[in-house]
Length: 211
Image (cartoon, rainbow, N blue to C red; front, side):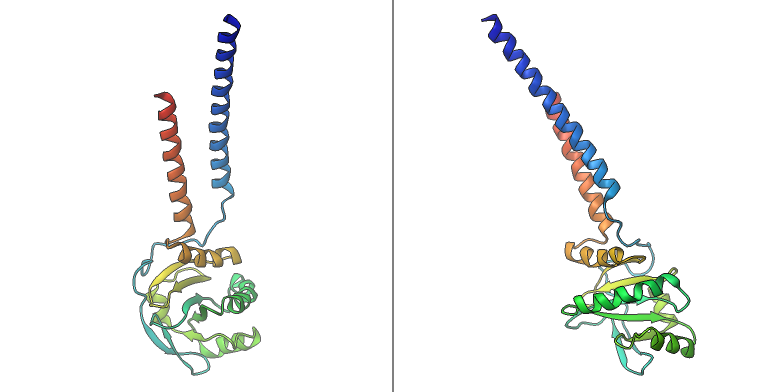
């Protein structure tokens, strides 16, 4: 009888140790996830907010085509701000071309900048960007309050701003699409909300164990 009681105590001790180990591992996994989570586009708290109607524009592009920004249509619209003198912008051009092809069913890409027409037209042709409308407008950049490049703004079919941010890689560009699909302002917001829920869950688990 004594041996049975002792074995039960030992068994409960092992179970308690396993629970503590699982909680510790869960915490470490959460920390690791937070550290290695993909970095989305850096959103700056300037210009129209995500969820608001985008400013509307109707402008001619470099080839004289009339392009509308922020209006209802059959496709979402990615407004990509760049400059001929921006090295990162040039690095992203092949990525833009690839995305324009793979996401053509729902997305249209419009390039935007400001400055003198000859410089931009030469850059436009040299980089093989004829497939994209290219707008030159100081007012457009001011309306969206663009202070750093390259910067992208994603608007849905209703002309509502769904995501925006500073873009330095394909992952950051695609994070705008992910944010739109998830219905959040940015991937960072989604990850932060997930981490908050995890912390609350751990706290509730800890309280339950303490009780």
